[in-house]
Image (cartoon, rainbow, N blue to C red; front, side):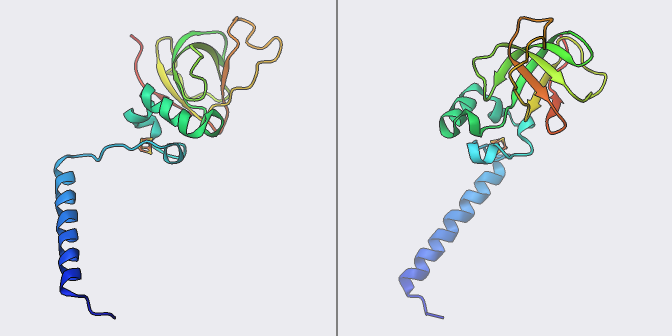
Length: 161
Ligand code: SF4
């Protein structure tokens, strides 16, 4: 093992002191700041809970970084009214892949429970957005569809007002 010069040892000591200082400071500041990136956030298992992820400016920068097609079809929505057992009219609060959509139909292919009611705010993860076929969602003139299959997830993010 090569012997380090006095100068190398001094540099190493300074680097360690700087790192120790930074770590001590971050420990006193509480949670580390979120650093959203398309690669990390797309696979993050806590993104439904992450305030930074759902901010409009974050979603815009993720779209610019990755392009819509490479991002999960995540959306935050508010239930407006129920059409039938599985279809709801929804207001779209934010949509990572479909930012232009403000109203849509939510189709639940599995029931997340009996807590769904108008006004409830949900976060949808990994939904699909197929083009509705003729006659589908016919109770509505809304033509955007979010479908949650067994692969998708839904989280309650607020109680009805
Ligand atoms: S969703 Fe939030 S916690 Fe997860 S990687 Fe993105 S910024 Fe980090």
